[in-house]
Image (cartoon, rainbow, N blue to C red; front, top):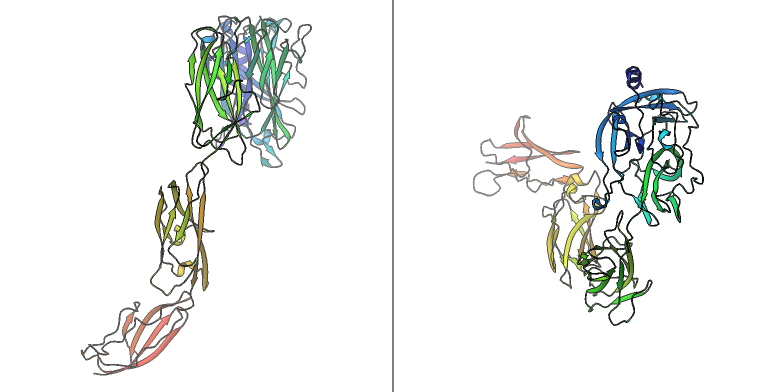
Length: 626
């Protein structure tokens, strides 16, 4: 990789000149390698770093970082890249009202474009990138000597050319981490998952964070290739199974990357998640994400509760019951929410499970409590299209959440609803033709014209369209205007086919489907088809001209009439007509068979004609009498 090697020389000189600063600042982060498609600088390389703004040394915030690249097979050094800082911003909270003074984190992004030469990155076992820096936050609870512990970011990637073919891949992308904290003895969820730009599958697992070889005396050393980097040392009693101990120790969902826990003790806990990338069942990449989570003592909060009681019943709804709503019943029903807290903002949302659209609304969507155990009543109103099919109920999920910190407390109610709908009579489409099949000879000049009509008995909004089977209507010259409206629609179909449509054949068949569909909730449609059979058999060349004309101006037999000469067939079209005198001199020529010959200015005598078609010609003679 020539560009990378050039940077190595410059970066090495700069590294020797850097003043190493010890710092207890590193909260976490990860490396990334993203392909720049259609660019000479074919990759973007960098790292996202989370920096402790309260406990860290401000002088340890680097303006650039140096990452090192090694070959996995033998840990041989491939090169290193100096990467500038391109962004610095504060880490936000899910709820800005939940900010606490003991946590303040800065997100710093370093990135640059580089060129990776395929010849340098073709080893089948792949490569890895590391960034080795000391030190971590000195207030970490679950590791020994946290202020002296280094941090090593790690990313593996596959060869960029495999079996002689370019292998395209980018590392996973992750949303910005939010600076939330967990409350002791309270359930907590934290989204640590990402997405893959190439659509590869991702798998997550908790691992011990890497420490690397940097120390407090040498915080910014040149990284060393290794198959077994040093790891942090947990304090006694901590393992990967209880990195954050409690009644529900820290776990990660291996498919989504969602972290969950119920912590039992206050503190600042470091953890790492290894993200493995798979394509077609084969592992093609790995990265390790570091972060810290603070567990604090929060004011006790009671979650809201959502309740529903069917009209006419004395007990509240319980799961798996089916609520039946008739077609003449009211569209809305009432749901209640209670909350023990005073001046608490409650927000209600909902969705139809396993449905493409919800077809219901909630009013009001939020409410603030005014007294303890206040009760909020809201309406769930079903749209006209909320109709169950085949007697199967629709599940709706109603969720209420409060303003608790660091994340809202919620309650969920799932209701099974069976709703009867009005019968939908399907629309009907017809044509003005007496039959569904129409034969047409190309020698005809009339063209094909008929009306298409769609009618909806329910007077619903309907559409009317036409579609060719295996062809586009416009490509073959067919004309039909799509329509939309209410109740009844009409549109004319017209077509004047010519020889170009025959493709050298004597017959062709085209099928056009005319489709109407209503826009009712349980949409219905109707289709009628017309088969158009074209033939080229009746237009064979036939010549039958008179042998005498008398151009004397009496209006009788004054001209040689050509318009009844056949156009021929698509494979043998009329081309031209030529007339010669008896000495062989051309006295008339025309490509237009509708232009007759009226020889007023020539002498009487015997003349010869030639009618030329593309495949053959016809010759004959006639006498001009004056």
